[in-house]
Length: 139
Image (tube, rainbow, N blue to C red; front, side):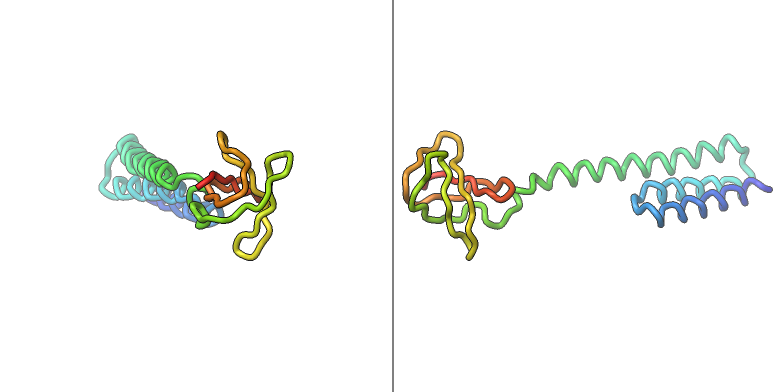
């Protein structure tokens, strides 16, 4: 089997594996295999073909990993993206554990105080959402 055919078969196998995983890394490695196939079509030695495949596939994977890290860093936490943050609501009474039952958007919620807050009735702002609890701070 010629080097060109070997590279094309490897590229096809990597694309088929990529379709089953969906991570894009195998697709970039397949692009590296295509670069190796192109180098083989030009009659370059096998070691040069490997270098082309490694550079194209490796750089593609590194760039994808960098892009994913930047995208994840800019996304913030899930609670930062919650639409109810900074909404205001009224708390009528706090219990002995410094929790309250409040009504927000037509549903009953358990509210807790943010650190450093005093449990007094009145208007509060939603500072954070932790699971199914609203973290409140006094307005």
